[in-house]
Length: 182
Image (cartoon, rainbow, N blue to C red):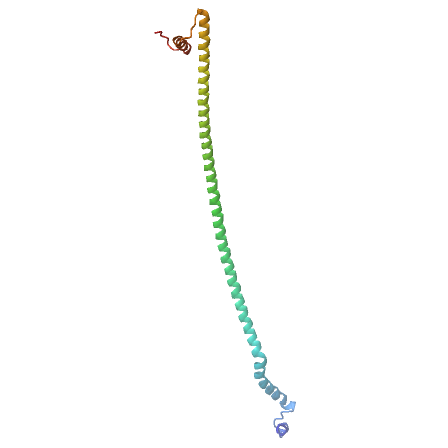
């Protein structure tokens, strides 16, 4: 059936439309007919998937841009937080250093004061020991002087001068005390 229909269209009668003859506009008719039939087919087979792929690509690009902006904001927030933490750590370190210096200075003063106190105590003890030894030496010298005086008196008087009363008298004379014989 298509061939007789085409033959009828091709004959077109006299002065009619001949759809095969290019001189009578046949080419134009077939061009438009093929175009109108192929447009929906092209749209479904080619343009639909291409449009869908472009839309999907645009959506992915938009998501990637949004993710990049969020990552940039997150990085900026993390940087700001890190700067705050770093500032706090520096302040804490400075405070600890200052406290350590103050404690060291206080401890140094304590040690110096303790050493001064200990040195003073040692000096006082040494002075006391010196006085004791000095007193012992003076007492020993006095005893020696008393003994020498008694011996000298015994020789001078040619009698025994050694009684307790004589010894007390000589000790008072040597010691610089006021002498009063009883």
